[in-house]
Amino acid sequence: MVRSYPIDLGRSPEGDKRRRGDARTPVGRFHVVSRNRLSPFHRFLGLDYPGEVATDYGLKYGLISLGEAVSLRVARENGRPPDGSTALGGGIGIHGRRIGRDWTAGCIAMNDENVAELFNVLRIGDPVEILP
Image 1 (spheres, rainbow, N blue to C red):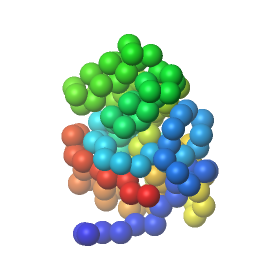
Image 2 (image 1 turned 30 degrees about the vertical axis):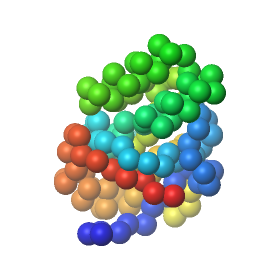
Image 3 (image 1 turned 60 degrees about the horizontal axis):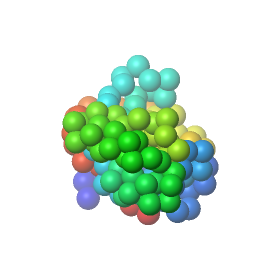
Image 4 (image 1 turned 135 degrees about the horizontal axis):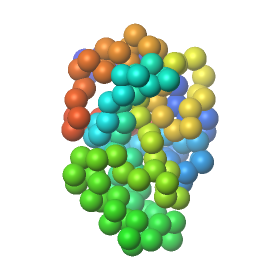
């Protein structure tokens, strides 16, 4: 480990994200697919959620169609942000504005100084692992 940061998670931090609106933060290995220096959350590093595990889960349990699953996979393979409008949700990332309690819709919130440090280091395609 190189660094450790205090974070806030989704309002329901227990368990893996399963669907849009569950206020959980996804667990697993993701990649940075977008960078927004002008985010209202100070900085935003977008992740490629829903990932493979969430896509397979959504397809297996009828949350998404085969067409949606293919679209999500193609976006990930091409390093683009996956469609966040499916029942699995999306728009997950690492951003600033940490307030000291779990409050996000599923993102990882950090102090503005800490997310700025990560923003200066992480690039599109870099892996990010979110552990339970």
